Image (cartoon, rainbow, N blue to C red; front, side, top):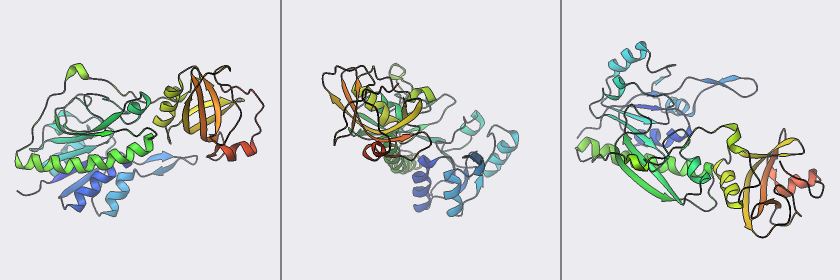
Length: 312
């Protein structure tokens, strides 16, 4: 059976492997829709989203509507007349007119085992909450938030030290491979859809700045999971003598502690211990506000911390 004419909708780096594999396998991609260029950095220079850059490298037409609900884009969409829409971290909610239009429907890659972790940050929260597994779901889109019927899922174990950044890249590749399997099933009529179990729904809310604030009264495992789940971005952080200290890598050491939570201990080859409720969090990789990211050994050479300093 002929490969369907696909309109691809995506914006950040997570969508790159999916667009790349569709192109490599010679699917007819009639266009790529991404969010508009946005100001970034101190100079607020307009920066193109990653998917736009790749699409241009592949010679694919790119469209960047401010809102896909605008009548002008909807008219353009009807003229494109895709047989299938593939959505990967696009960043806008699609209206019903787009969802219902393609004969082979709208497919979405979601980086969790739906119905768990619906929402904006499904890669971060399984790590933060100490899950031992996660995965990728290919679903049919509906007008709800990640509530469409499931077509395919693949589970993967979470590494004990795996960070958000590492898991992000791994799930992006896993999702791309699973996408091809799903499209093949859709085009041959062998796809099976499964309604999500409402009783199993959990959410992955948008990350806020306060999400990353470390509470040293927590257990060491919870603190380390927070650090892993926000590394390398947006990062967990604490306050060192009034300055923000970002923490990228740390390990948990359960033991009896006599110090108040947040108190710095004696540095060792393992790193810098900080007291928590049930042990020490050993800091290994940090960044002080306005400085470069560095290993804790390099950081301490330039920052002589007073004994019994308390991180807030």
